[in-house]
Amino acid sequence: MMEVRAQPCSDLRDLKARARVDAGTMSKLAAADTFRSIGLDRRHALWEAQALRDAPDLPLFREAQAEGQDHIVTLPQMPTCEHVVADYQTLRLSLKAHPMAFLRKSMTRQGYATCETLQQMRSGQAIRLAGLVLIRQRPGSAKGVCFITLEDETGVANLVVWPKVMEAYRKPIMQSRLIDVRGTVQRDADVIHVVAHQLTDRSDALNGLYNEPMEVPLARADEVRKPMPNATRNHPRNVRIIPKSRDFH
Image 1: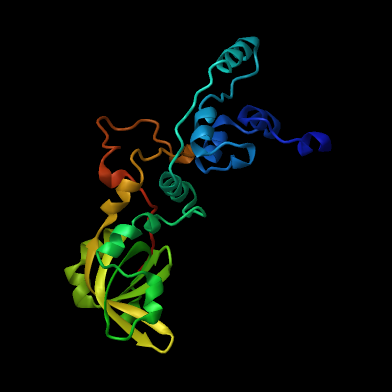
Image 2: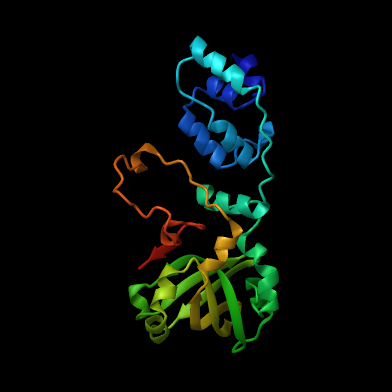
């Protein structure tokens, strides 16, 4: 048994048989890009996972598998930006790159600062910043003040949104995945905040990172067995390029 465990798996079918997992689990693992150790990136692994079946190993199925091995399919390389988006969709993070890194060149031309540059900015200085919304907090003891944590490829920034600004920009504040902020830097020793004056939802900029949003396999508890007719599954508001933030009220 130990000798079998020590031998590397040759392909997904070999791994499925030796690990005794079902085809659905193999698809989830492929979507999470976990098969690079056997030479398969996400796109190739998803392709091969689609051929796996949970049917018993009968002669009929063995013949079908043998026929399928004769047809070698060459898939185009998956761009890094698509890998990053797929990582966020399946794992909520990526070690390959940050989504904001692919937008940085354009943002720099437009005058956006990075979270890292906050360390060199003086108190009261105007700033234009953009990043993914990680956390929204509106504690009861803060008298209506909302705190937002943004993240870009260089670090995080903490926003302070006063009640009047919250009232004026409630929709982008509560719905944005990528938010554009204009405000002023507030420093107190080593504590740095950005006091927001204007906020804009720029989640649409994330759509360019992935042309065809990947359908992540669902767990059985999440499946809809009888979907409603004419369901708007492909409506833009239902497509999550980046998972939702963690919000506390």
